[in-house]
Amino acid sequence: MQKIIDIQQGVTRMEEWRMAQPVDFQSLDGEHIAIVGRNGSGKSMLVDIITGRHPLRLQPPKYDFSPSTKPLVSDNIRYITFRDSYGTSDGAYYLQQRWNQHDIDPETPRVGDLLEEAYQMAGEDTPEHRGLQQHLYELFHIQQLTDKYIISLSSGELRKFQLTKTLLADPRVLIMDNPFIGLDATTRDQLKVLLSTLAHERALQIILVLSKTDDIPDFITHVVEVKQGVVQPKCTLEEYNNRQPTIPSHVLSEEKREAIIQLPNKANDYTAHQVIAMHQVGIRYGERTILKELDWTVCDGERWALSGQNGSGKSTLLSLVCADNPQSYACDITLFDRQRGSGESIWDIKRHIGYVSPEMHRAYQKDLPAVRIVASGLKDSVGLYVKPNPEEYEICRWWMDIFGLEGLYDRPFLKLSSGEQRLVLLARAFVKDPQLIILDEPLHGLDLYNRRLVKDVIETFCQRPHKTMVMVTHYEEELPNNITNKIYLIKQQ
Image (cartoon, rainbow, N blue to C red; front, side):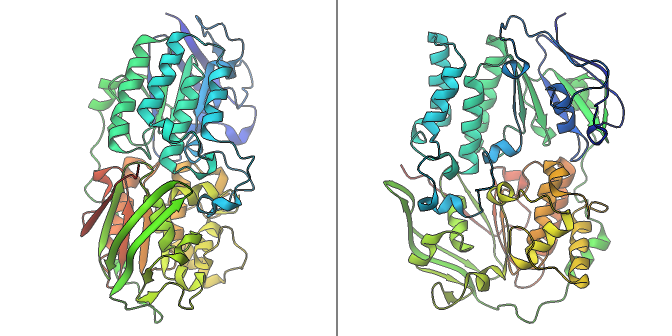
């Protein structure tokens, strides 16, 4: 049987990238593999070894990409990382940039140009390849995105763009980190069908890196689990499913649950009846309408589920609440019973709001110790420019413990796994004990245990008086049990 990828007793040259034990990994022709494991277990480190990003000490990985004739490993293996789902990030990107479109450099690439470039680089202008391009464009509604700047896409639209771009390159091996997160339910189902079709009809081997292991597609044939830096022997999907333990209905300890409930109320809390009130709100960018004549009222103590198709305006709506969108001051918006533009500063608004989102994850390129990232939530900044006092650091460590991050206080943020980063940003959102908590896709990249943990924290936090929540998710089962209201946005044509 053809061994497309063969790694035997692999040990990286750089000690900081070594797994707990030497790596054995084989991928045979016709196999489609899911790499699974807890957050921080070493899944991404294994992929970096597979792709050759981290060179090995003794013998490098052996590859046999036939029938492909492309000479380079990078041409034959394409890897979409977790961070790719938020787009390419560089030093010029900042949290509010997506909504400040007048700040975007005219030289910033547009979606259509980048996709056509990817198509040309594949060097395969055949009817079959053009048919694949057309199929991808229809599946992901790419035609509606071609004239948009890449930096202005929503997280779901970015995910569709990255998938299209990578599939157009026609690789021999396609590795995808959590490919279904950020996609609405219809698109997720369509993508699974497409990947299954490609897996059976083309010389394409698919490797998925999955945190949400209850959503492994049927076309996957084998599973490789990583536990605490140790790569387990490969098994069939059926064998893996048969031995999976059931996640308890609650994982947050009673001690931590009671500690959250007993947190003291702050003296400067608002006691507003209407936390958010929007009247006939509309947002347009050029000829494109994002929100149209929206009326929405969120009252004290309500817990809202906000949903809708990719690109329907969910994150834009939340950017108005958080004062990250410059158009918010031209809209009829009241927060905490105070009319927007009546003299309050942006910091007056943010002081009472805890917030986590894909855009925030994308903006955080600061390789600060994790506890300092959490502490930035006390100052409402990306990065930490005012040194917290010892009492504030103690609060930050307490919230990190709540989210299962004990012992990671001083670990550099960019050295954490993507799931651990998301938990750090969640601790950052809760650290100031806000009256309004806004959670935009908060469970991205989390394993099943940590998903249940975060839901427990949310449900417990919202039991306290005057705590209001808005949560965005494309998975109905991710919603906490205490949702009181729902709103669904329709994508404008």
